[in-house]
Image 1 (cartoon, rainbow, N blue to C red):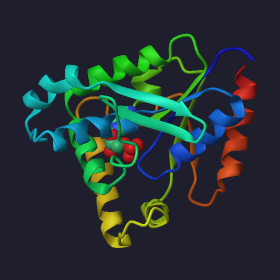
Image 2: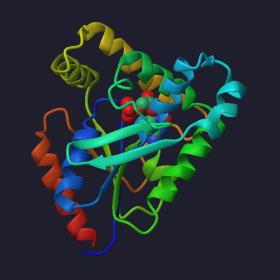
Image 3: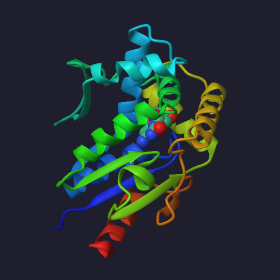
Image 4: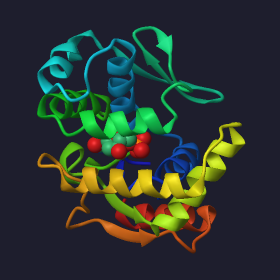
Length: 222
Ligand code: DC
């Protein structure tokens, strides 16, 4: 198969990572969860007492952040400065911090550079908010996933409950709506669908159905 790149964008909880992981497995290619990179930046700041409101202080720390995405037999691990933070970055506090630092120009520039480097000369699936518009503007296929806020909050609730975390649906709905607003209204590379992206509303679709549909679309493009 020819080298390809698939950009999957969309709001929190739209099913991006679940779908991207399955596709990467089926297509035998690398999956890059760019949200995990922004989460790592937010987590680093929380851990090191750097104010998330202080753009200059956050930006100054970027060279100190070594973020590695490791591909292991039981999934992707996120390693920040040698420490596996895959679990620690999956909570609402870190999600909100990621959304905040993602509004800063220097943070975006640094993450985009790292992501573009990863996409050089290999088939890749990347998910995020600005993949089709900024990171991989020439992607073979661009998908924009959406789903209702209720459905997305339900999915997150299930995910957190499966991990034994205590959450409630109303506060998750609130958190998701707030992040949607911050991610789509920020000045630099806001969450928006690329003009040439294919929009899929996943509210009433099964994961396998979406995966099969994207596979079919890719086949048409190659
Ligand atoms: O996909 P996620 O929920 O893990 O992303 C966490 C936050 O990171 C999200 O609210 C916005 C930001 N983000 C971004 O600005 N650009 C990306 N490509 C990926 C995530």
